[in-house]
Structures are given as C-alpha cells and as structure tokens.
Amino acid sequence: MKEGRILFISFLMCIASGSVFYWMAERQHKKIAVVDAVKLFDQFNMKKEMEAREKTKLELLNKRVDSITTELQLAKASQNEDAIKRLSYTYNYIKGSMENEFKQSNRDINEQVWKRLNPALDEYGRKHNLHLIIGANGMGSVLYNDEYYDLTSELIKFVNKKYEEGN
Amino acid sequence: MKKVIRCLLITLLSWVLGACKSRLAPDAYVGYVRNTKNGLVRNISIANWDYSFQFKPVDYMMLMENKGEVNKDSKKRRESLKGTAWFNISFKRSDGTVSPLRYDLGSREEYDSRYNYFLNQAVHTIRLLYNNTDTLRPIAYLFENNFNLTPQETMIVGFQLPKGHDNPENDMQLSYDDQVYKNGIIKVKFKSEDLRSIPNLIY
Image (tube, rainbow over all chains, first blue to last red; front, side, top):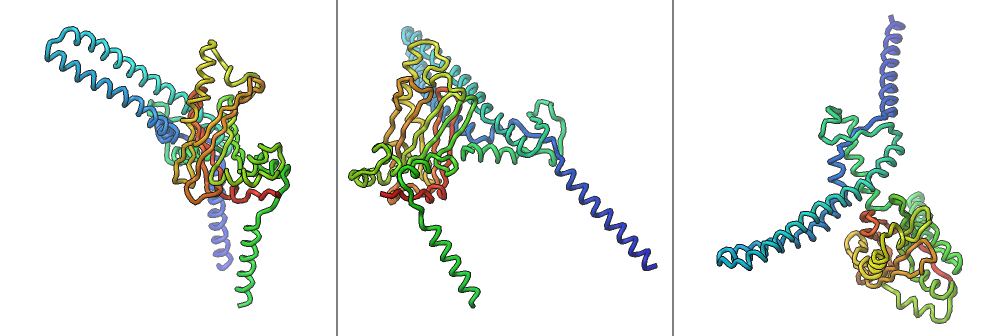
C-alpha cells in the first residue's frame, strides 16, 4: 500500500517536472515574433524629434498663409481687383509650397526612421534567436496573435535605448 | 563586531582605491583616450556611413596642440580650457572610396553649397545633453578643411559646461542631426563612470 502511494507520488512528480521542462524548452525555442509596425514607428524617439523639428518649419509657413488669407479677405471686401489678383497668386504659391514641404518632410522622416529601425530590428532578431519578425500594421497581414508572440513594447524599448545611447 | 569593522575597512579601502586615478605618460594617455574600449570614442554605422564621436579631455587637447609633449605653457593652456567639453565628430563612407563632400554630387554648385553648409550651418544641428538635464549649444565650432586629402571629414565642437563643473564628470549625450546625407539624428552617450576613470596625465 505504502509502495503504491510512493509510486503514485513519483509518477505525479515526473509529470510535473516534465511539464515544467517542456514549458521552458518551448519558451526557449520561440522563433517567431509579431510587432505592431505602426506603434513601433510612432513611438520611436527619433521620429518624434524629427516631427517636432519639421513642425516648427511648417507652422511658420502656415502663419504666412494665414496672414495672406486675411489680406485677401480685406482686398475682396474693398473690391480692389489688383490686390485680389496679386494676393491670390501669392496665396496659391505659399499654399503649394506648404503642401510640398509637408509631403517632403513626411517622406524624409519615413525614409530616415526606417533606415534606423531596420538594422535595429535585425540586431534584435539575431540577439534573441528569432527566425521571423512579422510586422503587423493593421492592413490585414496579421489577423490575430496572442500576447505571447507580441514583442512590440520590448522592441520599442530596445530601439529607443539604442538610439539614445548610440550602441 | 570584528566582522563589521573588517567590512567597513574593506569598503573604505576599495573606495580609496577607486578614487585614486592611475597616472599615464603622454603617449599612453593619448592611446587611452583613443581606445574604443575606454568609452571615450563612440563609432556608429548607418546605411554605409561611419560616424565617429571622440570626446577630447583637456589634457588630450593640450597634448595634441603640442605634438604630444608637455611644455612650460601646458598648465596655462589647461587652465584656459577648464569648464569646457570638446568633441571631434568625424564621418566617412564605409568603403572609404570618396570624400563625403564629393559623394553623389550633381554639380560644382552642389559641392559649394554642401561645403558652405558644413562651414556655417551644421553647428546648429549639434547639441550636448549634460547630466540628463542641461541642453548645451556649441560655443565653438570648426569644420576641418582637409583639402580632400582624406576620405573623411571632421567637425570640432566645444561646449561650455554648467557653472561649477570644471571637468565633465556626469553623463553626456552628444547629438548630431545629419541633414545632408539624410541619416537622421545620431546620438551617443558618454557615461559618467568612463569620464571619471580617465587617468591623470604625468606632467
């Protein structure tokens, strides 16, 4: 009877330790990660700083557009045809410049941020023995993933530390 | 009680030993500052561009100005540089085949405008965050003219430290915004422990 109990307890312990080992091995062999690319991009410090820099430039242009708009409204109110023509031309020109500047700065920020993020992602993948990092961007490429595979916040921490310390 | 005294003595001894800086002769001192292992040079590669950020302690600057020797004016020069922090920011193509100023040029005007940018504008894109609190702007800047003899360009930049800091001994984060080669903002950190363990120069 006693022997049977010991045998039963040993059997239970074997199952428990087996499960723990299996769980640890499973964790160690995690080779796939999913990252929310939009979140990673938005929360990268360099992107935030570059956006702030560009914002000042664009705000300056916007102020010029505002002042021309006011002048144009005044000219329209006083029905000054010459001034309306001149100011309309200036307004269109500055508005166009502003839109171009906005598009260009967006392109530049995108290009420069990904230039920095891509090698950082490579490095992270290599360091953590990942075989695949899938970028979820809300466009349907990843329909579902559980939190276990989601490394977005870890990666945000990693890329920002790398950026701030220059490692 | 004995154990407590022993522990205190060991702590005190290690603190004293830690506080005592080693002393180096001029050649060894220069070697120490240039050694990447000592945390005073930081190298970063971005998309086929190599950037190097060298922190230059006052003694190192003084040695470089005197061809690696100490002379009678050295101490005076050292005094005049007190309270400042100096850096060299160098950049080159990773393959080293072409001077950065000449890289991917469309015309002579483009070269002139790029050269002019580094002479007069690049300084506005450099900042130093000292002790994680003070953002410092350069007080001195020089773009070294190497007459295209080397495929590397160097900017020399100096900052005035906040009052009460004769030597930089707190964390420093140098940032440079590369708007010419579109590599974004590049930051490097010089850690306080590396700055505090710079040896003394033997005069």
